[in-house]
Amino acid sequence: MRSSEHYIGIDLGGSHIRSVVARDDGPIPRIIGRDERATPRSGPDDVVAAIAESCRASRAAVNAPVRDIAAVACSAPGPLDHRGGIVHEAPNVVGFIEYPLGPRLASALGLPEIYVDRDTIMAAVGEANAGAAKGSRNFIYVTISTGIGGAFVIDGHLLRGAANTAGEIGHIPVALEGPRCGCGSYGCVESLAAGRFIAEAYGVDDAARVYAAAASGEPRAIAIITRAEQALGNLAIGLANALSPALIVVGGSVAEHEPEHTLEVMRRAIAARAFKVAAAAVRIVPAALGRDVGMLGAVIYARERRAGRDEWFR
Ligand SMILES: [Zn+2]
Image 1 (cartoon, protein in one colour):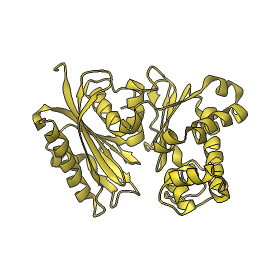
Image 2: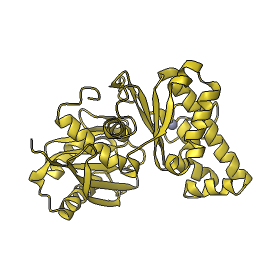
Image 3: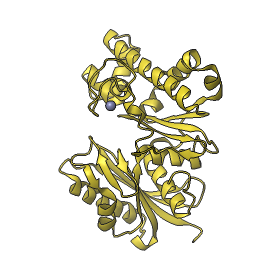
Image 4: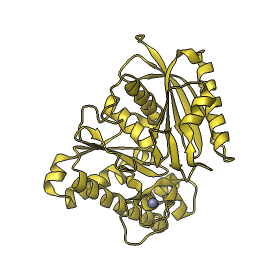
């Protein structure tokens, strides 16, 4: 293996496709080329074509030929089968139902070694290797963004469960009643506290406007944000009691911009209502890899799998 290798990390989201070429020459891979474009709404094959175009553009930006790419990983919405690269359902990406994303990407990119896994799992692997969870054997990764998701690392192992949905914390019901969630259930923490749902509840297109309105004292915005905080508090207590993490690493754009309405609320709820021993054992910290976590997580995931250091999350 050469001392420095190139990886491609892809972040497939409902609104945007992002890709990077990163050079693996330090604990955190260095992004040297990147591309971002809108996710096509015209079906999965067009999405794959757009990902391939994006990767070409990222490579072209740094003159990196295909032969220089050691491996590729794509961070995708779940639930999915990471072994076969099959996305079971991704409500925000049109047509992604039992879609063989891994095999299709492999042929579109002309690269055999492609890893596909849930976005939050790749983020957790990235945070464990190079971010806020470095050295931790018991942590929960939580993202509070457009949606809410997560991953569990307990006793040094990533929990996948029987259907690989372990860690899908956005769909833990935290209320006895509540709006219908995108997953078909109701009372999910995501449907009460995720950015998209906060914005929808207020009738705007960006949750930041709801937080701003609440800060200026607008009663309806305050009610929506208060409800979101109660939902996050309940989630945090459930996570602390049921999984007893040493760390809860919280990332995502809403958490990043509104820590006092997210991390702080989770800290207070755990201190007030979780088991005392569980509360004493856990710290809630911001994620460290920032807004590039999707791509960096994918690059680190690909590097670790290729190096055979993947037993704990395979
Ligand atoms: Zn749900």
